[in-house]
Length: 429
Image: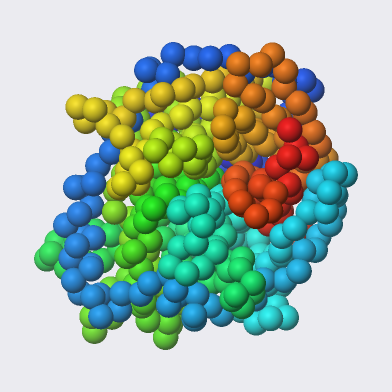
């Protein structure tokens, strides 16, 4: 498990960055206590849709002829997902019913580069069932975030490429293909020319790609978790095709073209969501998911990862923030987004969380080759159910299906042992 060991609180407040990666995850607590309700009103966010607007709009103008839809991106998908493999990663999930899912391919159908690369690590998972309840632009899709660790899998080795998003067709009416798109932060050069940079956090020797530990797609908006920063927001209707002539080039070139280290598509950030006040007890945005319990009251669920049992005494929280179903933005009053529900779980290494109809699932990681744990809890009850889960699991996403069983989806991150896998939700209650 690629685990982030967080640096001291003072440094966090000064730089809003991440500490070095370590290889040994601590095991989850042997037994889970019932989540304890917290005062939700203490968790407040601000959202800024104006700070990046000049750069994003300028980029939209110069790249107007290169704007592409999700459907056009999928028509140009260049990688093929493989049948579910790497069974050791999800063997614990087979104890109840046969899982479904896929393994990663590569630039060609026979390549397994995305399964084995040590430079990119998959983290967040969301789907078009989160976004619309069904399809988006005529496609049923899985969306997965990856962060770039460094060249050769060594932290800080450049050029740092930030984060990418994989759009994967999960639909019998389309080919079993997927495509990577680069997530970028737009800015204006000193002369007013629009450009963009990779998603990075920190500075100097501590500069790292944003961890993107969770993603949540609602309407046109994609929320990406940036651990100490908050949530970065992207608009899935603003995708641009850029040059792929030279994979060593990035951003605007002297001839007016744009590059992204060989990636054909970029999605610029359009907004930022941050804690109202940055303190040592501020929310750690480790993972995020969509709860579409009601079409009139959707919400984002933010989960915190705690490195060990001591840290889990204060962190390991799960916090709900309301979404506006019309705009997809968080609901605010007087410029502040206030949480509507919050719990302390006490879980160590919580990697994913999701909820539906008052039911909650929490996924945790364990050390070595041990399976993680999945915890299931119903709001207001005194029992937490505990199951063996995938090895090195990451985010969770709830997949509603009116014609079939609803599914819980997760993904694993270890190089050479990666899967995106789903199981019937009813088997894990």
